[in-house]
Length: 233
Length: 332
Image (cartoon, rainbow over all chains, first blue to last red; front, top):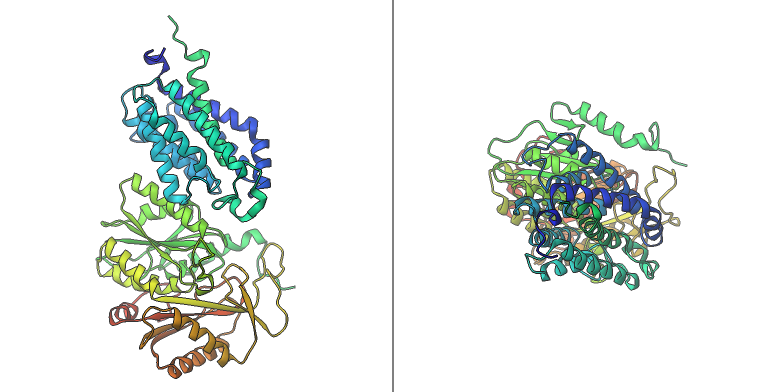
């Protein structure tokens, strides 16, 4: 039903639930992410991500309770992403966490400027801007075994969708592309980021940052296709 | 086993920050919410805020050079660790002026990323921001090193010259061009007779045989490519001088500024002896020594060693170097 209006768009509630679902997901896979990072990194990525998303959950509770942040409409679809951006940029340690914050910040901007509710074109713009910001800062290219290996394919997949396509469909395409990109990091030797100091030890281990990017898009897709998003009439 | 004078390894940095803020309360202030120092006095003509920062353990860099004629804000990280992007972002926001803010960044991955994230956030808020990257360490000048040369002693020279230029009201692009050019014309080399003591363990970061120097050591206990015999000082300085001069652009007929910098636990007595040897080596090679600075400015905890930075001067750079500065640690 690609022309289904309203309920399938990225409404404020849908984005709130997306963030909540992502928080639950990363908590459930934290042991696996940590195990991967211990093999090919400094071992703190899983914990940083969970700590960050726990902070995001508290920020979402505050948002729901009426706390806004300045210029933004606290009921807008961008407000939950903006709250996540602030938590990840301000409070999360390491480097991957704050880089996630840049992705959230660009997604928030794109959704905030789009028609209500934002759709595929806003997702494509925000993801592309997030990937660009992360690449500017981290100076990583595809193939360096970082989160960029999942994020750039996701951005390309979204850009290849019709701007008016059902966002649930676009997120499916993005999640598949991100997951494929994350799996492709398994055979790579890290050249940038946390795993680059471990040399050949990083071979055979997928990059946990790239996996987390795939989970972010998978969470969004799962949320937009969940029962709670079906129109009730 | 050498031990630091401190209550605990964890108290080393926060206690020093508190002590520094109190000792220099007339010149600087500490923002405890966001973890940065800022100057209390700013030249009225300044249009660009100058922000630097980096791991602790390199004192008096960077906080010691806050004040008129030098930096507006400095962000200290934990020992040898980059400051968090939030410190840099908040410091930059606080000291940005009409033409924005300039980040003076030593070339280390963590610093590049955290200053980079802060720069993205500043752009997002509509604050102009640019960067000068310091990469003067000749020992890491190799095509095999993808991350490029490390940033070391030249940081002080860039902070001084850019500070003086900023006080004249120069704009952001102008300062970036000047800072980039100063970095291009400066190279450093460091040697150590003994590594620093790791604060957590109280053990040396590495050990050397007697009468052997680590040649090309970093300021975080990074080992060098090789060692050299603890030769007569004059011979060591000649070797360092030759390598540095060869690496400077247009070295023929160059006039230089020399920075003789202690890495932590070398004595002032030795540093001035080194200064004497440097002057002789330069004179023997027909290179004029326009200015020099001798002391401990960019340290590496208690490393027993020194770095030598040579900077190819010109009249404009000397004028800016000679301009007055009033900071906790600028000695001139």
